Structure formats: structure tokens, C-alpha cells
Length: 75
View 1 (cartoon, rainbow, N blue to C red):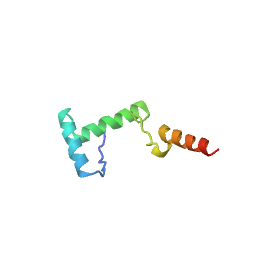
View 2 (view 1 turned 30 degrees about the vertical axis):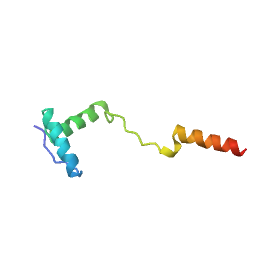
View 3 (view 1 turned 90 degrees about the vertical axis):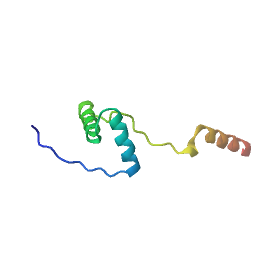
View 4 (view 1 turned 45 degrees about the vertical axis):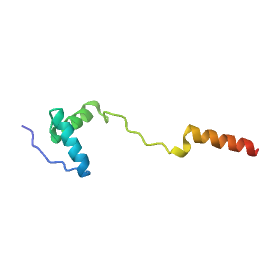
């Protein structure tokens, strides 16, 4: 059997409670769920879901349209 180690993660207490409740509903422990995640990362050689940076709302299409119209009016 492989030697085991402990991984400590800091998170908001409410998030932990919600995560524990979810894991329980799907038949896992929090530790089991983290192990599933880690194995998926190692198997797929990537994070198994998309991670994106939230776009700055200033640059949304609607704001850019207003900005373009404003520039056109001033020309």
C-alpha cells in the first residue's frame, strides 16, 4: 500500500459545510471527493473544468457600443 499524506486546505466554514453536505448526498466524503479531483487532474493532465477570469464589465459589448456612439457624436 502507498504511503498516505495529509493535505490541508483553508476555506470558508459555510463553503465547507455545503461541500460536506453535497459529498454526503453523492456518497463521498470531502477527502474522497478531493482524491477523485486529483486523480482526474493527473489522468487528464489538466484541470477537468474550464477556469476563466471574469471579464471587466466596463468592456462589455453594451458598454462598448455606448462608448462608440459617444465617440461618433463628438467627431
